[in-house]
Length: 279
Length: 278
Image (tube, rainbow over all chains, first blue to last red; front, top):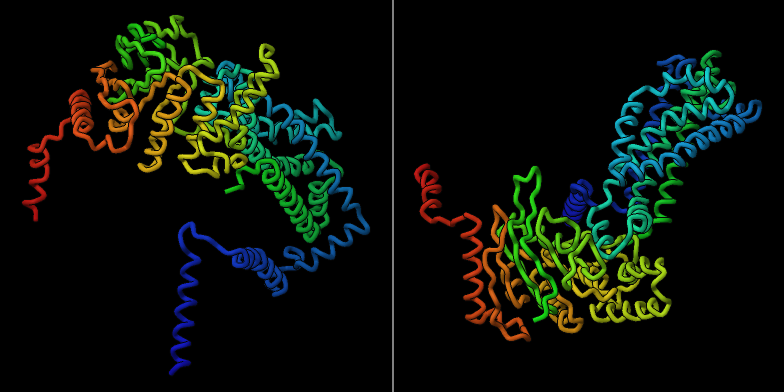
């Protein structure tokens, strides 16, 4: 009878523990979080493994994780994997940096001064809706087919979005913060440098993090069309030789590099804006 | 009485001139006076305060400080907002010293002035009871603490006028009482002229030497009520018959000017169908 009771109690505590997990906007312990995160990552991996090994799909179209790992190894040994990764990362970094250097001051100006907004925002909005991919033929005619053409495409793909998003970030600086500075006798340039810029920094870094993802998308587009090196190019060439495992490897690599850069941005955020993380 | 702020036929319209926020407002505010403004929403009390602060410009009329018309915001008129005015990236002490950051760039300020300001920041930190949170960030503080930081920051450059726009509106009743006595103390200590906007009549009477009742549509001064309480206020006075009477008078006046009635007959009629349904 006592074991019966223990059983019941155990059952009840398991049920209540399970219920506690699903509290709306509830709290999740570190370990439980890790458990769920790992399940979310490993479940698709296992499904993929099973699907490729089950024989339901042709190996040529659905290579397994092991095939992809082996291909990655041979790509690293016999081919120039690191070179491909390097050149792709370089193109993204160059296009993205160029875009950020111009977009940050421009976005701040648009978000701060109405005349600049009226002058530039409708135009930027218009260009933003033009598909960056459609500029590729033009870019190749104007810039040629060397490195600068890929950088130009990444620039076109990210710059206009970036300008508008940063302008919006600046407009979201609370007006009370600005008015408080005015009543303390701050000049216009002091308001920009001492209030608007420090206030917008966290949102701005988030905007950069998000547009970085788009930069990788445009990199692949650029390399699919006009390159003879890089991860995107490797993916395209692999298709020609029916190397689906290499396509998989290339896509996963880009995902991993993206994830790493994203984490780097998040780390920078925590490092630079401690007030947002102290409670 | 020395006149500190002189408001003359101040008018302010919004839109195409069809919304009249302020209509011919005339008022003199004395040096080191504590004046409070109450009124139904839309009566223009906040607009008037923002005009004195230089954040809004009048459509016509003038506001003079020490006899000179104001043009835009100035360091002589500090302003405390209801909330969100602190800089979340600066610690409490750096928020308080923010004005120093501005002045240090100016050539007419000597290093001795900066030193004094530094000592004053510490003094204000003490006065506001903020010493233990000196290096905390604003979002680590309670609402009451945050407003103390905002007040300390406003007081740092020794403003002659302190403009307060419902500064305690978001605080709970107990914290607000503490803040009331604190701000009365400050006004006595610093000899600051304080213009205080609130929707809380009790607060207006407790703090003000005069309560200005404003009326909406168009925004205007309805009446001015001198407060007949001893200069040294204490919380018990809120229970005195004089206080209650004045509160009742002002509340009635606000209700009348707002054009709202708590018509019991109307209420009864509204609830009747529900009763018959049962």
